[in-house]
Image (cartoon, rainbow, N blue to C red; front, side, top):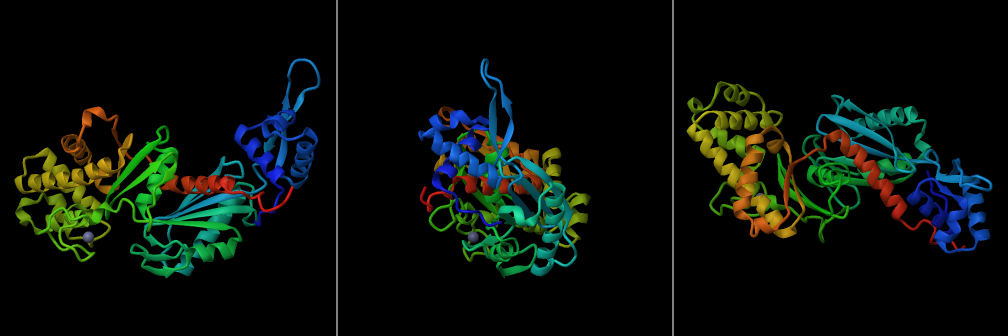
Length: 407
Ligand SMILES: [Zn+2]
């Protein structure tokens, strides 16, 4: 949907009504600091173009009841699409940011770019139609993918789908005729979602610390993620923590990711003598890699925590120290109110979460003087689509649509 250029005063009225919720028309002029006749003209234009609607009446003692004005939820909508490793999640919010509907489905066998675009289209049309909307009403679209995305919305790499240099932003923008925001990397997406609707919804500053396939931290202050000059803020995974440690995919030796990420821990478990491993872990190690990394680490660490299995316990203690070092670096760099632990290493291993929580207290300067809370991530993939749709909605209202046109 092409957003019509509105006069600055019309946009001002819309902004105020959106911020205040249902508002009596006579309150608008004083809020905006314009003449009542100017504001009434704007209200008439917005009512006839469908951006505002009448949302009931407010009785105010004597005199005529005041008509309440509200942003018309159905004048347009925003959608969020989360392309996860095995699933697609869709969410649609109305023009006023209220969630209208959401749905999930498994990705089909064919994971090529074209095939996934077609599945997105089919599912998105379904969710839109259930919400009483249509693709022509989309005002903005958010798409998230577990991979590296450049600033033009090109998916540079997505290992789980086997994508390289796929122009996701352009393809979606052409298909739906609206602005598209593409975000890559679970840490960035989860940090935004945690701040909006998860463990960080009531605080000003949070660090989301992710430990799974990769390791990274993301900082959000007053709802704004810190991206850095080249979108690399918080890439702690490639800080060298053991100069003589194992080779990392980036070329260095002993990066945090090379010693403590999910794949690194699976490799370390594989190097242990088989007789030192519980049967459940040995069974998992025989299966193809990738899908079972989370299961292997969780089973091994669960066993190490329950029984005194020395080689596993030593591995577990080292991983705890390494992951705590990464968390301590993030806390030292950003001084957040909340540290959110997410990613499959933390999700499946309460013992690891507790170990990291205990260990960083010893590593962080002035622990007692901080008001830091260490909590578990709350957001699941389904929420990321909702969070993404809400994010483009916020971006839409924050942009100056009315400014270029003279009033
Ligand atoms: Zn590295």
